[in-house]
Image 1 (cartoon, rainbow, N blue to C red):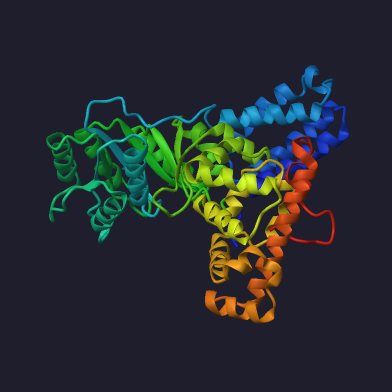
Image 2 (spheres, rainbow, N blue to C red):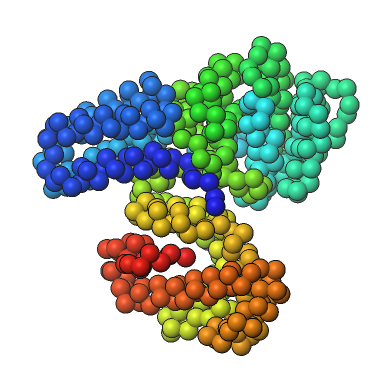
Length: 462
């Protein structure tokens, strides 16, 4: 089972507050003040910095006790809108802030942060992002002479990303490596040079002096601080120290797919003044996404993130196959061959629970999702089971009797129980499709994802 997504606890607590407000209809000023107190506690429990919480609550209260809100047709919804706007503002305002590529080539990117924050991996991820999305020629250079094999690790990441890495010369200082990287960048006409600096387990003067010296000889267009979202309030102290020393231009938050409370992300912009530009969403090299404050706010407040979901689908789903499958489903024709193709497309998009988290209204069925084993390894095992079936069995699963199930389980390296589970889930999916056809677009819009789920019997949605 995948770990709980970041902000999940905060999202749940805020959802409870808003549910209470919506049920009350008309709001009194005391209702709003009570809600603000609950929101304040939720933010503090999520590890948001106290000064940030104070500013946030003051801003929301000022607007939420206005006559327009208290007398509105849907005052509870008005308060949600005010909190959403305040969250977007706290996270940096609407729209992702792009990496600065408006400088003379080779453009230096200086990567800074503590040891263990994911700095080296993030350097490789940014190199891949610039190569694939911006068509840039990128040079990766490791300036980390402190950690054993750090330079070799970056060279391996460069190879995986399909970009160049600066050859290792033993005995050079970080400043000498930085100078050689920029000279190589100019000589070999690179667009961007990413300089991965050394980290420490804690901030010390030697680290800051080294980073300042590298900054002075390279004049970076971007000084990106890489922060592990799991470190909570410690991340803010790190950000403040680096910002005072080298004036960071942007932040990359790693492990946002983890189960941290999320307060560091909400506090980072207010504490440093620098925007969060990118977020790491997994270990893979392509698991790096632009940070959109309005989308993150929507996910925190249970509104979903349909835009990101559509973008992810557009990048990973075969449009032609998807259209063919949609036509078959509309005709009521859907077999295990189609189910296997669907599993393949979903697996390309990453973790299933991560995808589900982008849908509006999923918070209401959180428990049912928690009980369903939503994880890509299960999808891969299911694909193996289907591939071990004959064409006739895939077309007509009803013929799957005990002997056939044993054969398929042996052929796919799974158990008969897993084969049974797959067949049951396939039947449930067919039921959901029938339900969707009956509801139509208007019915789905009214009920959301929950409208597709069985209304009783405790059956799992997947």
